[in-house]
Image (cartoon, rainbow over all chains, first blue to last red; front, side):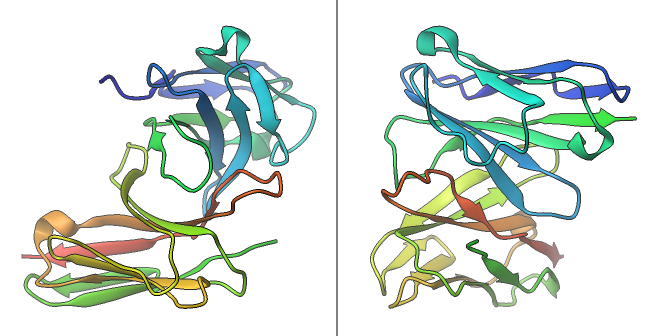
Length: 114
Length: 113
């Protein structure tokens, strides 16, 4: 099966601009997760979709971040307006089952805000 | 806030040696997962342990979940250069509405030929 695909792989934008990251999960995986790793820190949870519904968005940093998963397939994560501290690697992951089981991660999008 | 402390942060050893990486927390987790990450790639799941005291083996890698489900270890026997990479532990919780994994910062492992 095809893996989790993220686009773009890299993005460099100026402070104040908008960026949209996309994630295509493995087909049939209802659970989709977004994570972020800021330089020097651990990977941190952002939010979790079950199909098109947000199950848990407790990790979203602030209201400049908007995640959507229309139709329960691919997901987008928009940052508007971007700030310097938003720089990092954004990972998407998907799983067939929720809860204790491991995920399949994408290769990530490296976002640099200058 | 649940924290997972991994140690050591960096480890460089010679091929053929044994090593152990530790993952500790003051909190109880429902599961503990170990991932390996290569540069430019996402983490790849190695194993999930869910029962206190559980031991799982994956070829030369042995994973153990602590009896109290607060800690875990990864032991590699006769390390090979191909084992080089970033090893991450991640704890999961069931129920309570918090679905995300809590990750440690990782152990950078280098196996020198």
